[in-house]
Image (cartoon, rainbow, N blue to C red; front, side, top):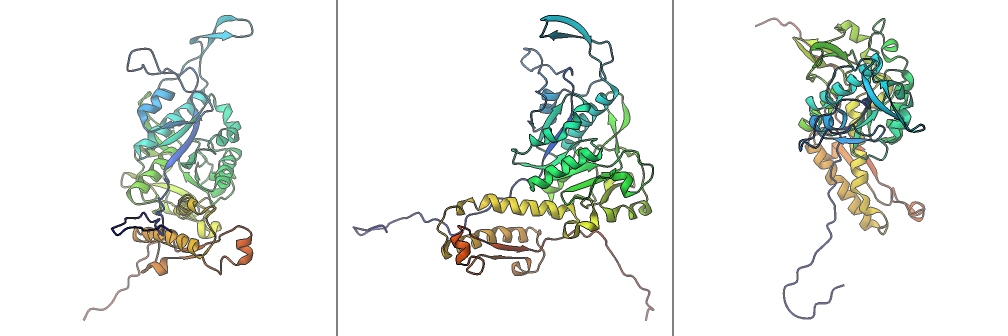
Length: 413
């Protein structure tokens, strides 16, 4: 205790009972796609040559379309077989000419990556990490690339445009389920033989950490000046970011227009969607010339119980990660009622702000959430184990997916 030895006014700094918890970011995306080594790169502004294509397999932080072009190149036509390229053979020390053409599959995959990132920023995205792979065959090693995303803490959405094989989508789902702080946006099969859940998913299993969208969208290709089909996952990631910024992560990313999409591969009817929505297939529909996202479910839908909505899963991820990062000051503090009070106050203040923002359901904060950290949650055996336990309950708002008006005819008097 400070000793006061002479009369006067003393000003002291006092540690606040509660520390504010800042909400973590929810809209940074992680993309994996094809960009060949011999793409034509744009010139540097200072006239000292051209930018070099970034190293394959290494995540690159991209915050705008211009930066993407400087790392991966702009839209460009396919290189045909026979285009000369100088290649050195290290083992012989010789130089020879080899054909530098791109296969149809590689070029198609290269356009998924280009349109994916462009669609992401066009729809409201602001930050993404991109891993370049050199050819479409390398998508079979998806788990290796996904592992590079693990240390990047701010990634909250993962998409691999056009990765529609069951093994590929399984790898993306496993990555998100293991990390527990991100969700996967998956593309449905481009041309299923019928509009059934099994055929559209290609057998990919249910997951509370994934959302799948169908059909593919058509966008204007700046090279051919024609409308071409593209997987919707990159555009959807941008819509997620847009809704997060305008409304909040608790708002379902649905009933939103897909910017840049000019048409759909298939126009599904309400009856078509009736067989898909319960299984968690989110359909993009055409309404009066607009292409709207008309689904907000995790893959599996009704089978996923309380996490059948992607907004619920993402908001829970947001709560967990925000509270985890915002309470690091607790570690190694004396495990006493004073600490329990600080934890209760800190978390309660954070959840109160969430309730005021409309993310939690209830007329009063007491109805919306509770935070319990006391002798009941921390008996002697828990304290002896070096643990402090806090129980938190939240009533998360759910989307109004089915809006019902009951109308009856009455006789006028």
